Length: 177
Image (cartoon, rainbow, N blue to C red; front, side, top):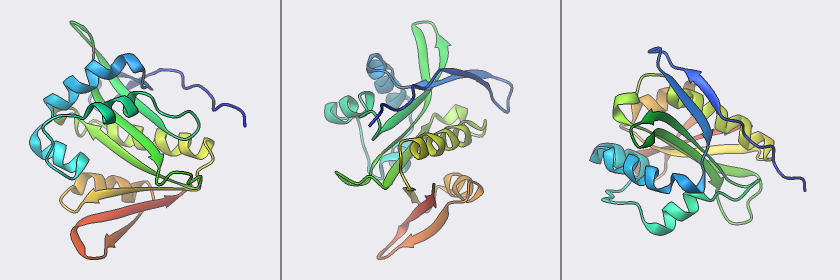
């Protein structure tokens, strides 16, 4: 199996005219990921993790900054900051189960003051392309029913939206690649 193609950083202009850099996550991003998490509101943390989290676990952080090539991928969106960069959004996909080579699950996080700029759409479209290159056949995600922005985006990008049996608070979004 040949290694997946590298992802070159890209400068993108958002709807509001601001420029950001979209790039693959790096191990050196760990401290910035923690800072980005700490800047999220409790509601945003709940929407992303579907549970109340006060901090990112060391295990989750480690796994997040070291995705398995060809099986997992993570993007970050960065802006210049006094200390180097700030991460204002991130997205990833992982196999839904160990050994699953057909279906991956995605997750996206966007800082509150960067919502409505088109970042989530760019991230999800990039994840779809990358997962297809990695050989996945289906991408899915779990979205809280209250997260109407994510549900609208999923529908716009042709995901099927389905209820989760026994849980009216969560919907499953799925798309063939």
